[in-house]
Amino acid sequence: MLRAFTIAALAFGLGACGSRTSDDYGAGAPRVSTQQAIPASMQRVEAKRLFGAAPRGSGQRAEPFGGYSKGCLAGGTALPETGPTWQAMRLSRNRNWAHPETIDFVKTLSAKAAQHPGWSGLYVGDMSQPRGGPMLTGHRSHQSGMDIDIWMRPADRLNLSRQEREAISSISMRRASGAYVNDNWTRAHHEIIKAAAQDPRTARIFVFPGAKVQMCEDEKGDRSWLRKVRPWWGHHYHFHVRLNCPAGARDCENQSPPPPGDGCADARQWQANILNPPPPDPNAPKPKPRREYTLADLPNQCVAVLQAD
Image (cartoon, rainbow, N blue to C red):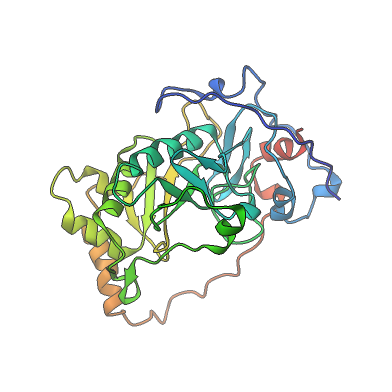
């Protein structure tokens, strides 16, 4: 049903934070067409099956299209499985792909993490599929190559085999269903998340509510970075970094900025609701079943991304 994907990936030079445009990631390659018709073989097929079948990134100018939860990625780059200060985990998923700016972010943050006692760097979880798009399992987001899951487990060894990376798990930081951190939480977690939030490329970081409350209580200096750290369900085995669209990526959709302020009052409200759940709203509408996307739901450029060599 699917056309064969030619195994091809571009090598990209990485530079300083925020200094590049999308033109730097493709050696003058033309922009992806917005006029591609959806082939009959791809019509009415779940998009996750089309994107999940792509083994490599496309040989196109690197550019994210659409949003974090409804998009795709041209010219994706793979994070090397092992680097001086990181290891990519769960390699069997083939989700260590991203926009080159995201790859650079991981390298930069992991080097900072390696400065903390007990941390040789970072264990990096899911990023995106080779061409982004909806995933066969798990995440609704991570579609445009601008999302990263980073394990809470300190990366004390960077010589894990492929087999070990399938078997090892991260560790939970939560207590009382996420209202508080547990004894696994350290000041290093605070500082690594702070470093991620202070990177100007970062749009948001998702953590469980108790972690945000703890950071609010412990931070005594500049608190502006706390605005980017947002409480969300789960996220106690990893924290989720979401980057802004790269400069020049005109068809990439940013999420709305977080509300003004440090967000600590909101996090404490989450905490209070966990400890003393409010009664259910009898008038709340029932959630609608989640519909699986097809290519017709995604930006038109995603057709060309799938068809490219």
